[in-house]
Length: 256
Image (tube, rainbow, N blue to C red; front, side, top):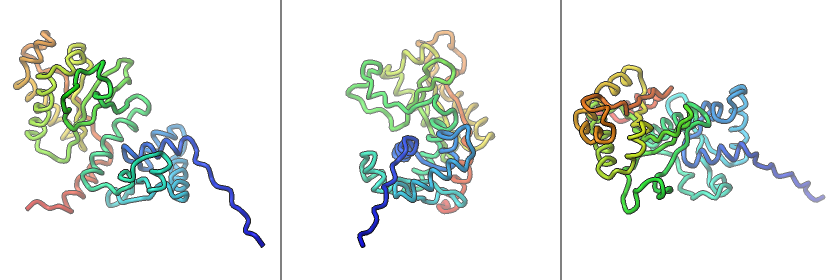
């Protein structure tokens, strides 16, 4: 007797969006809930992820001691025409980086921020022939204006190291004039993603001061009203549940 054919389950549009998020960001129950089921119970997010695991499009991996994230499987990568490299597990630093960026861009204010590669818009950003720093850029429309920002993720760095990083990157931007229009119009931000209110206060104070001390003059040429003042470029956001990932990372890699 011939076997009865089982109907192949189709992937739903929202589930396909989750797969695309898994390609360039990171997927957790909380992130899926905030991004795709903001008005629903968190169980809807769990159910959607279970279904994609059962269909073979996603696979769970440890995120920290208590949580998991979901990565693409080779089958999931094929479905969205992504390279098989996106089906590889993330290393520790990659998990921290992607979790922080994905939460800020996609989950913090769903639909209001998008990642942006300035090299894709040569008519807007004069970066042709140059290599941009390897930092994520984003566009923020949460207050009705299009604001451009560059992201730095805190891996428990000393504030002096974070200050050095931000000054170096922003200094390069100013030397080349890539984002002068945005800075002049007060719609450019240096955004640091950290894991505690105390570190937020520390970075707000010291990174802003370092930028004022070392880049005050070129910034004043773009915004004369800021001459001698601390420019309001730095924003620091605390990412929920990031601290557990940082502390676990330190325990697994003790300083020598």
